[in-house]
Length: 176
Length: 74
Image 1 (cartoon, rainbow over the protein chains, first blue to last red):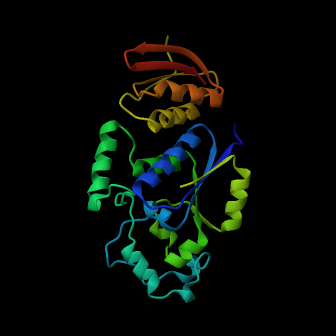
Image 2 (cartoon, chains in turn blue, purple):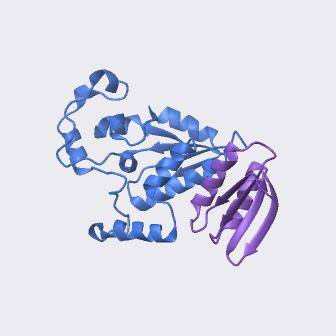
Image 3 (spheres, chains in turn purple, brown):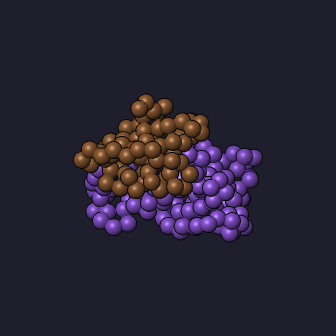
């Protein structure tokens, strides 16, 4: 039992997809299976800290960020993406029935009434159960994200080789 | 019969009973017993699956309407 492994790759930034990814992660982890969650492109949005429209960071710490960022090739596009794609765990849209922002509010109400855990609670419990979070390095670099912008403290920034190794070792890989 | 730990997850849906049980089982030692009570429609299936995966023994199952109590030996 101890050496069973699962990987989940979250690529979408919608509430319903993030919710299913984290429910699976929690399910696997509670059965004692080692889970590694990978995040790509819009998948980060559920782990981002919510910031105001104009509070994007213009300055990065070059020493600490140099492990996964190439700051010389940054331009105006990185802050622009950050401004338009703010994310935030409680501010995700739905892939269907978004209803101009009303959909997620109604959906969260429905979850609460049915006793289903919300997304933030699921993220915290995944952390508690020892799920590992791994981030895609090129997405970090291209979209100008820093590990400080995330609500989970322990993340690893890795490349596709590591992902290939993880998935080949694992018994199951989910791409959401 | 007295159990080492009693958990109540009444009113909680799918992943919650499993997560709570998994957390509690980690704090217990082998041979200790735990009782879990819940009323989720798929509660029993989830707990049976959990026990099969972790090689735990189900000692007792009691049903009162929808509420099910299960005793597990870790």
